[in-house]
Image 1 (tube, rainbow over the protein chains, first blue to last red):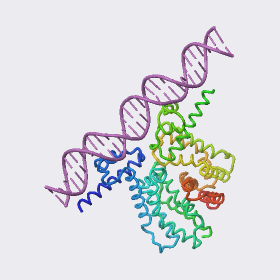
Image 2 (cartoon, helix red, strand yellow; image 1 turned 90 degrees about the vertical axis):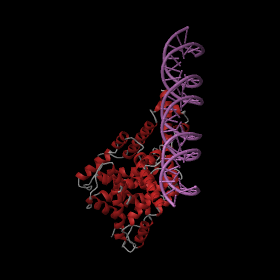
Image 3 (cartoon, helix red, strand yellow; image 1 turned 180 degrees about the vertical axis):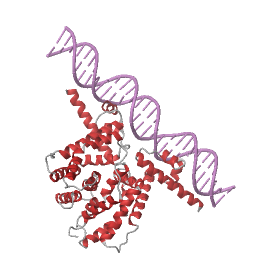
Length: 195
Length: 195
DNA sequence: TATATAAAAATGAATGTTCATTCTTTTTTT
DNA sequence: AAAAAAAGAATGAACATTCATTTTTATATA
């Protein structure tokens, strides 16, 4: 147990260092030696926990993605109405992107570059299923526009990624009121017009 | 003249190769030797046209960004109404992202990673000014929501980037009708409610 | 116009560095 | 005292950049 405990601490430190360094420098400009140094570990030790550099970054991606979706669906219950369910999920997504932006930026970089291998990307996408299921239900109930989930996601969720990056760059600051307004925009863009 | 002509061809070939290779492998996983080979040039020749690798990618970014904004504003005139002006610009943005996606993907990667240096990023942003000016005019005329340009951009333009990536991954295909619908969504999200 | 020569452009090979990964030894745990 | 974990140093490959030559182009002269 002591052994396992210790190992998990080191593993976590490695994942944390990877996120921070990759965020600031990108995958290929982050040497294993720096990751090791930041995690206070010898470079050789990394290879006791991960097969190689690609494996390290794949596993980091999957962990952060899982953390993201756990966070996002934490308050959501399938028994909720489509409208309430969407609001619940959307607001958690916003919170995550704006408060946990170290992790959110890491995901954005993974999703916009050829850094993560295809199987790991697929693995990461799975976790978003409850939102897609909610939308399908909404379409059946005639509450949500009958269009591709990609379009719904583009309108309702992807603007948050842009705002996150803008905020991270210090260009401007989102407040409560703006988030509420952004939410209204998101809902308007996916609900059927009559609602 | 013949000399200059030849040089420009080589320079263009280098820029083209850079875009293609960086798109597929990322900046740091693209060796100068491969860029040279794809451009049918010796590695040493690159250094006659660019200071170093960073300079090559910075200049590539600025050129692609300029091409993008030229394309985007090609049909736009300041004399247009806010509504027409926005539609004109938006549809060109959509066209560019969906038709020229090699270049659009390159820009997305540059904007989501620490690949380009700060001065070059700033240089690239400048070109978008006419759209921001149009929005300011719209706010004064009471046609556009009186919110930060970042929010307007997030709602109205950033979804297109997401759709572009989804389309590139072959996940789905945008048709004329969906683009029209996406445009309506974009306009709804930034116009003042009464309009 | 044809030839010689200087300047510019281009090249392939060489250089030195950085880095992922492995090896051997030491330390810690059981 | 055996096994597991960790360490630092060593290895070898990949790469950006430079160097020494060669090739091409432009210019001047006859």
